Image (tube, rainbow, N blue to C red; front, top):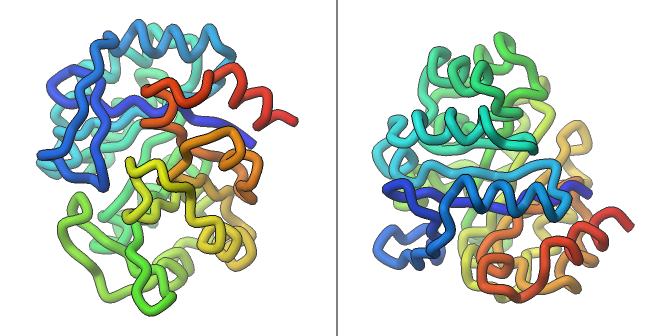
Length: 239
């Protein structure tokens, strides 16, 4: 399993949100470049970086900063936040980013996202689908979690047979450190065998990592708040 220590950026600072609420952000003092270097020194081969300002605005806001970080990073970056066109994606990939994350656009403009996949390849794009569980069905949310679609995770994912990577977040778990939604993740792995599924939301302990059925996992708040060491988590993920 690949671990992606997460670094969320707001106004150039490392922060964490609770359930995607921009008014509920915890600011950490770590400089982004220093944080990346620390993750790499611990052995991380990937880091998940989110331009929260871009995600909120629906357009890039910190791509200059992230391009600079990618150029100097020892690990590969998976970058999310505000991607809307070919030029934005190409710029990040040219800067050395390993993958670009496409979220609500996958629900709202599937034809465009399929063109992204055709142009850049499935290994350069991670689809990110954030869900609320409604009557047992994972329903996809959009627009920074402030809007709900009428479509399930399964319906949206089925539109992308050419995709290779999927990040699944149960919104109710994100930033709350009350454990991941293992049942949802098991269903995703079983029902979407063509996708390498990344778990996001709720991971709070080493035991949570041991129970994951996925190919990857995003670890954020628990890591930043010292619930476990990255070296320990990487050892478990590689076991």
